[in-house]
Image (cartoon, rainbow, N blue to C red; front, top):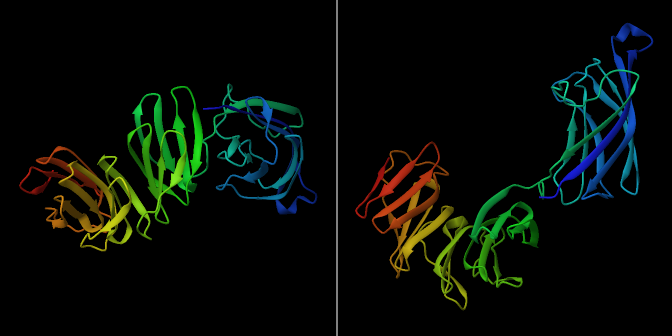
Amino acid sequence: MRRVALLVAVLAGCGLTEPATTGEVHVQVQGTVTAAVDGAPITRAKVAASKMSWESGSLLDATYSDTQGHYSLSFVVTGPCLETLFTIMASCEEYQALRYVNLFADAETPYIRCTDEIQTIDFQLEPSWRSEDFLAVWGTSSSDVYVVGGGGTILHYDGNAWSEMATGNGNVMAVWGTSSSDVYVVGGRSTILHYDGTEWTEMTSGTTASLSAVWGTSSSDVYAVGFAGTIVRYDGTAWSELTSGTSVQLRAVWGSSPSDVYAVGWYDTILHYDGTGWSAMTSGTTARLLDGLSGVWGTSSSDVYAVGRHGTILHYDGTGWREQ
């Protein structure tokens, strides 16, 4: 993960306003912000200052100018003159917000004081790749790991560093593959992408529904499940939709063989595929939860686990599902 250096030099003053009948205090701050990745200044960043949400007073004015990645910042704040008064934030395109908060500082932590002296603050932050959440991870080895998530993000780890591989259409919800040259990701807007070891290509999914999970037994037997009870299967040539018998959202899929596949989802739904068709199973739960089951995995056709909301753990022993 690349590191980001954020340098803030500020001049802060604190004094009673005139007239003092309002009981307000003005804190004036000005300085420069330099944001850099691997020593290279970041241009076109959005720099802002804001009050801590739990404090009274308000931010009266905040302006900045960008010169080759160096930002001149000034603002005025009304309210109590506290040393935990405001936040300086720089957000830079593909990176999550880089934030300096002068909160709960101690002798070893630099922060902005309400004094007339010029203060220079030098510190480092490590950003996330994007502000969206990561939703799934899969890999073939410690030097071949894939992470997917919000905004269509697909990242790859080669054992030394993370790099962005591609951007999907909408959120990417799940990733699975058979090898480093046969990887599938699924997500919103019926997205299915395939990686052949060289490039990602979009596949015709055979559905219009958003997809939540993907799993298979081989490159010619892959299943993806999603909204409105959608189940699609890839036979090595094309994706086609299968009849699930339900309209609830399916959130996970796993199996022990091409004739023993399980899909789980809302209302504690559990479906089983025997190689010919899908059928509903009795979950064995005492309550039907809206977004009940979200994961399924096992070791064999007689040892399968499903998990979900409110501490739900179900086990299948080859005969029936029981709560644990």
